[in-house]
Figure (cartoon, rainbow, N blue to C red):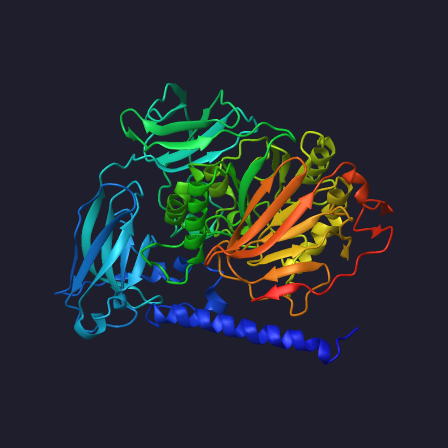
Length: 625
């Protein structure tokens, strides 16, 4: 039925509010950078900023009299800030820029810069032809070099080379992060260096006392393993070696102190974590959850709008860890948005290191990690990974939990059973992943783990107008409902966490597009589905103007989630990135006999069936833009 005129009033109001919000965002971007530098948000928002640069058209045409200097000749520690001065440009233009290349002898027509900033960010440059910029330089395991370029994005020309900046220790242990192994008496730590050496992790139960030690296993990936695109061409630099070591014999809930590295090359600074809790309903847990985080540069380089909200999210997550004992971070897809540019993986893991060296980091692949035409993903036509086709992700995010652990796996954590799956691989009945999901859900002992949370990337329920076979939001949503929703209902999954759509969304307890509501004692009568893809990437503007009746909350703003759960109570708070105020909250309970709250399904479990009984009628969703 077509809506009448009065029913379209909310649609008009939403459109006006959305346009106003987006316009104000564009003004903020424009005010912080030269107009010639800022991307077209509609056209370029889904692209890596480096993909805008015509790298292969870059030429080198030195202009006499130009000078580029730096106030440091070596990077002592990754993240060091270096000041760059440039002088004597006779015809300064808005699209002139300073770039950093790695390695220092890289051919600028074959290798994209590590980062770059417009010269006009120095307010006096256009008038004087001289200026100063500050760059935060990370250790890319090689020397780097500054360059001054004219010609903007489309005709970049190196007109002056600056100095090389060396690296004090190319084997500085970098990008540390923790993962669970499936055995809660263990914790895996992974890090990066240039050379093999003899990598180990040392740990103990008090600061400075590292009496236990374990050797690491080492791997990497090569340019030849990339499937194409920027990953195999201009985005490539040597990614280094990835070392993974397992700390064993851990006691549940006990804090451990650890360092990782090499006796010759050096060790990391000391970090600490709390070992995984005892599995069972008697345990309570505090968890953080995000999706679609991405990265941004503290120094404002590359592009001013590049996922700057991710800096707020990582700041708040680090503060949460400083103020409270969280035990886990779940990240459901679209991790770094490197999309084929190796240096951006380096930057990403340095950005989140203060968090993921303190709590285990459990992930699922998103389209920007996995998808590339004819590489084995579900879609076969999507190029969102920039040619990485899951290789970079799986080597960097070591999910060591079974033969398909880079794509789907499960683990128990306190009173919760987590099932993490991949929406980028086949999930239809008779696929290996479907069989895994069904067998895993059937094997859960709810007397041990009363709560079941399923995590993936593309959402099963989503407010979106984007339909474009095969990977449109609505197309994938319908496929997920057809294939997996009956399983999630049959095995009484409590929550699903997905991302991909860059917004926050929450349904009522729902099955087959019908709200089932809650029992009088507060027990949910079906799964609650959440979209939490608002951690850092640019917001998705294509939410539906009038929400489907099964949505209770839809918010177009950045944020993150924190969860407390024990055997009978689960509370999830969603917080705004801007000030940590409350965006939404959902509370679920499990009193005795909770299983009986779920209505029986009529018909076979071959697709989204009907519900016996009357579905609950709910008011329209609370929508905020």
